[in-house]
Amino acid sequence: MTDVKTQIDETVKANDVVLYMKGTKEMPQCGFSSRVAGVLNYMGVEYADVNVLADEEVRQGIKDYSDWPTVPQLYVKGEFVGGCDIITEMTLSGELDTLFDENGVGYNKEAADKIREANA
Image (tube, rainbow, N blue to C red; front, side, top):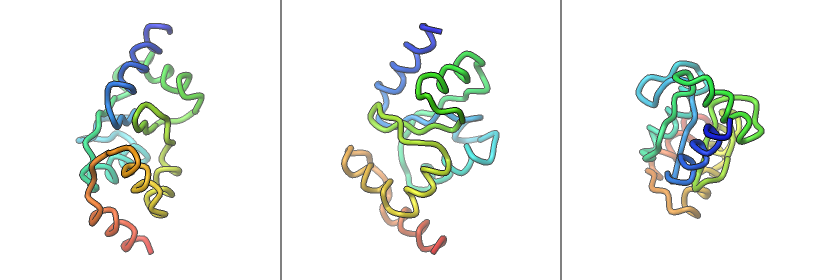
């Protein structure tokens, strides 16, 4: 498990934004992963996606790494942000915009506003 933890740690630290998910950003394999990937894709965020279904060790390893029991998991600048519910709430409240702004992560502010308008 140490090798997997090292691999996860390196991935999280080497990319500004990483989404551990079921499936890929082009083809999510569960509704929760689809929702988070959809938000990031719509907002034009560049991010690395890691398909936990491709490797059982990574699937369990990411849960151990974050001490969070579910996938998807979003990381920004090496820090665990949350899963689907948290990312949804942060998107709707504008907190995700603030997090991206504070960390120099590029995104389409207009798209973020449209998400909030559509869910108002």
